[in-house]
Length: 160
Image 1 (cartoon, rainbow, N blue to C red):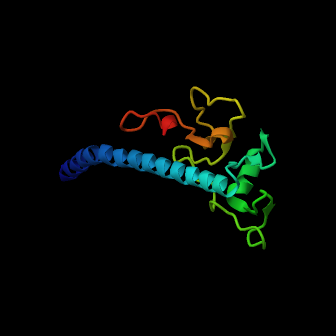
Image 2: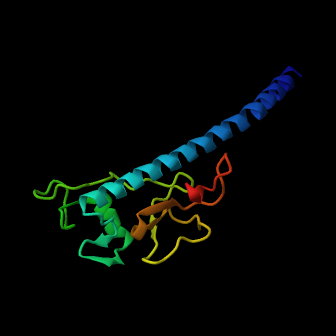
Image 3: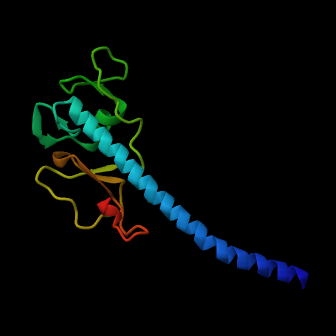
């Protein structure tokens, strides 16, 4: 009988504590999403500042065509560049710019870091797909979280 009473008390305590814990997990993911977006936006702005206003995703001599997401990854993370936008391995002499990030941060909700590119003249999807980490539109230097739903304050994650 005593054992049943102890188990019942533990069950009641767990029922009280568990919802409180889950709320903090959600708030932590929201804070991580905002922080990751801030890092990405700062890296995009630093790259553009170093390359005469041209954001990652473009060849400096041709801003009509967007590169693929792997090239953007090279521009932001894995390589360094010169004022002409030419890429080289980290530590190469004469390539003073970058890398701007050590890695592309993950979307904390689905743990993906891939970039879905929006072409010149294109618009962001009305609703996020939730597949992939981020939507990036080089033309406007805009990046968005690719996740559905709203945060604890009712703000859509997609609008962060």
